[in-house]
Image 1 (tube, helix red, strand yellow):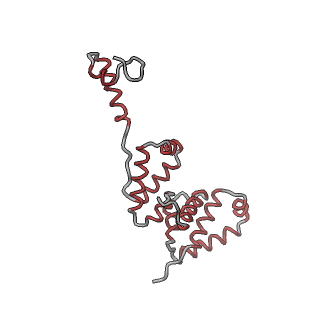
Image 2 (cartoon, helix red, strand yellow):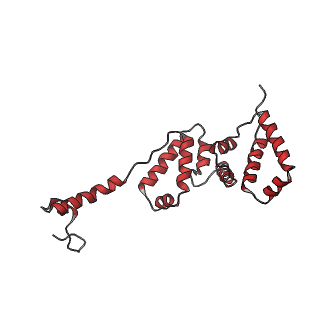
Image 3 (cartoon, rainbow, N blue to C red):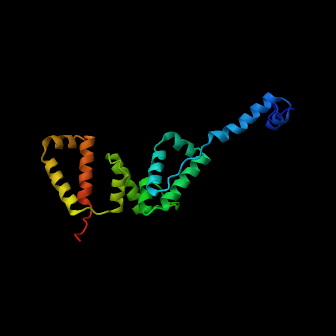
Length: 192
């Protein structure tokens, strides 16, 4: 019996109900293959891990393209990750680390600044999400950490070889100076 496409081939239902065992087996394989190929992604239970996973996925061109092409499984994964991020201890920071925008048509300046700061730190070679979280949350450093960073920065700025590498754009020198500046510009814990 011809199918509705006009090609004259049997429909999937007709193949399953026909006496042709080879056609029935091929039809059964065709039905079961998409379900077997789909494996549900593991969604982390901690907001920081969910933010890291969402960042990883967004930086994967293939995943991004499939999401933008309307993949229901990719959309579900993104929404599940965002839900975990929203339940975290500091959802504003976790959302900014993951680059998650609000659903509203207008974004807050605070969120956009935090997202920009996180991206800038990553571009400066700071891949440690803990450091980015510390900066965005405004967590204080101990007076000892502050003093050590200040002394180290002064020593490095007196080292002509380091200054040459830093001003020439050396990635490691830039990362080291960025970390020192983070500690120096962070609020200090009060002595208790």
